[in-house]
Image 1: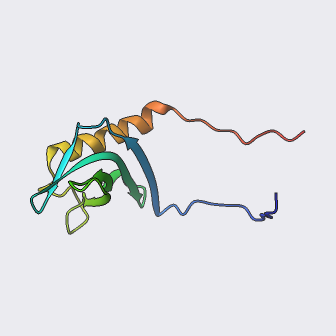
Image 2: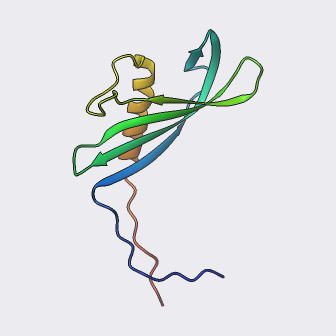
Length: 118
C-alpha cells in the first residue's frame, strides 16, 4: 500500500451523519416531477444526529429512470424549513422508503473489529 496514515481519528460529536443506501425492487416506487414519471431504483437516505439529539432523516436521494430511459437523481428534503421536524408535504411512499432504509441499517447488525496484527 502506498498510503501513509497518522493520527487518532475522532468523530465530531455535534453533527454525526450516516448515509444508508437501499436498492428498490423495480416498479415499486414511481416519482412524478413536473408531470414526468420516474421509476426509482435506488434510495440513499441521509440520517443525522445533531448535538446528541435522536436520529432524524434529513434527505433522500433517489436514482431513477425517466421516460427517456436515462438515469436521473432526484433529491427530497425531509426536514421542514426550521429543521426541527419533518416536512409536511412529503408523500407517504417516500417515508416508506426512508423507513426501509432505517430498518435495513438496524437489521444488518454490522459489528466490526480491526484486523489483528500478527
